[in-house]
Length: 325
Ligand SMILES: NC(=O)c1ccc[n+]([C@@H]2O[C@H](COP(=O)([O-])OP(=O)(O)OC[C@H]3O[C@@H](n4cnc5c(N)ncnc54)[C@H](OP(=O)(O)O)[C@@H]3O)[C@@H](O)[C@H]2O)c1
Image (cartoon, rainbow, N blue to C red):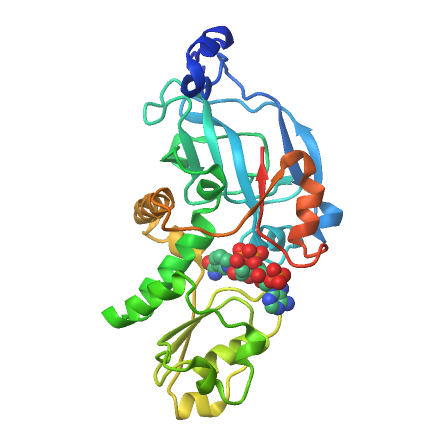
């Protein structure tokens, strides 16, 4: 049986922060609305929004009211059936990361309180729904004084970026400085700008990079390889162009380049699950201090179709879509 939460009338009297807690004595979750699929295929054809029955809240479970969840490329790849790890079918709820607020707790849960903000950590299937029930151990409490769309997206992209910057090449302090400058986007070159014969004249006094990060493949990856310094490393973590990475023989012989890969899901499922929660807290501290920013577009869950079309690139360029519940 779930713990008794504040009744609605009392909650209203307690003001805004208390009002974030919810109001019911629950042995099941409220009915939820979810984005479901029964078989793999093009996301705009197989995904449907539907009501789902309330879920039982067990002794050690936590029911979370979702606040925000992004549409990441890997979410779409799971729906398409081309991602290596996918939820079982038929009938899966889509989505993999997000943030929510504790709505009700099983009686044996003392690690969380109603109103806490939590993220699934490691991320796990089924975040595109209004209420989720999972064991308390699946949730990680995060600070609630950052914009919810940052808490919703902190794992898949920022944690990947941080790991790739830290885990492949030991950057010197000077390179660290350059890296931070780059994070501050003091110098930005597009793929077509870099796709010229005399790259050196464009890059000017910038030192040749020791580390290149590739999520596109095809020509974009070739450009990265071209500007890496002697002995540099390129880490591939995505393949948006769906084109292979091709490397010239001379890159290996004369520049001794290293090609590596990174997959967050594998990293988090190793012995790093606990460490990743500490790093997520650090990243959200940076958000709170205004030091970590990235662009997102918030779309109400009721406009899911529109958000999906944008994520699929049907409206031109694709700003990161975050569903707001
Ligand atoms: N390995 C890992 O652990 C890991 C972790 C996180 C992300 N990823 C991968 O990293 C990639 C990017 O993820 P994200 O969340 O940053 O995606 P995102 O926010 O949707 O951004 C995707 C970017 O790719 C660009 N793009 C799309 N199609 C392209 C094409 N054919 N050629 C060149 N650029 C193209 C888009 O440009 P426009 O805006 O101009 O369309 C957009 O800037 C995905 O493949 C994702 O699966 C991997």
